[in-house]
Length: 95
Image (tube, rainbow, N blue to C red; front, top):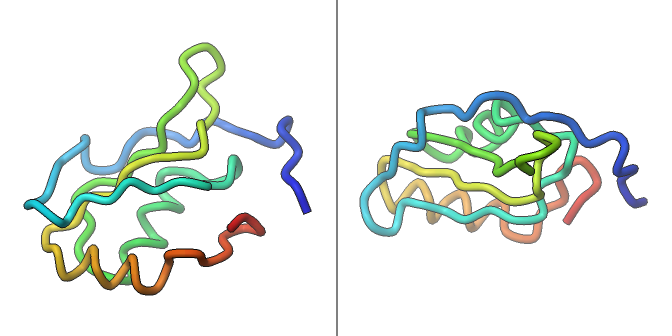
């Protein structure tokens, strides 16, 4: 099932003001569903450790999510747990 591009929305304000963690604790996340918000991203990744920030990048003109973003943890171990559990996982019907 593919997403309807018209269902894309503004993901809301970033969580954590773009704080970065130590080396190995900062993740680039892609294939983020257009319906996901920054809060959704934060909640999903918080299951695996202390998230310092979660940000979905947006299109300048529309404010819609661009399908990728960043999640920053306070430790490389938390980032490793998230990768282990979420790499290749289906989220809102998107892999």
